[in-house]
Length: 288
Image (cartoon, rainbow, N blue to C red; front, side, top):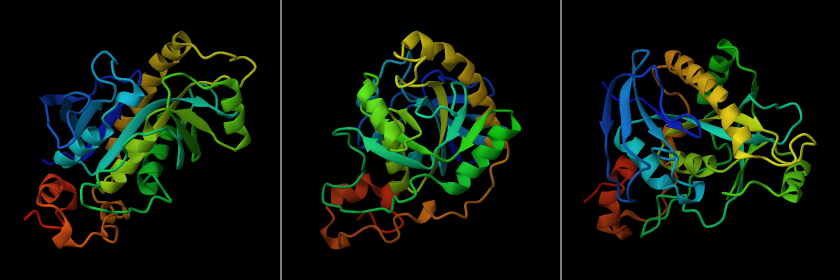
């Protein structure tokens, strides 16, 4: 049975108790090592692959993550959909700690992160106006509602560099721009998933109000960890319910993202690049 669904566990979600028939798979990629081994398993009759984003013991900073290796590893496993659980701060009064947000937009405030598989003699430009899979997001929203979460559909996720939390000036600026939540990891995952023709959706777990709120003038790790523990339990329920009701087939455009995106003429693509990117471009460009 093919592995259909990838699960990225963020801060606080380092494992899932409901996974059965577990096997650890260690992969190598042209971009280096992923954050750790993938746990392939069964969840409600579907084969899934789980990856702890920050590694065992949460030892990898957001800026240190090998996003390319993580997403490429899912592609090697045959994954077509990724559910990404992530801790975020809220930039809105009505989006409270312990709420869930299913964002549909991103704003990039990172610096120098590599967020493409392309280059090295191959140019491609995928569409990214709608950076997450709307079909997958709707399944996640329905699942979150079904398990009793307070969930918000849509919103913009500001992806900041970190590892420091926002200054008060930054937090106020993002609010003035109409942003909704803030985190440090998901934008690069979404970009790379789109290039890999994988559907992607974020399950954003609100831990705090960032530093703008009068009752949250400083965000602490202690505050976040306390809420993470509670959020992780809800995230597992949402993921399990999402997997249970995941349609068998994809009807969205995510699986065809590269159809009109590769601009380099095939005869000019270096042989090594062809070989290394074959899992992504093989439908359009042969390896030899």
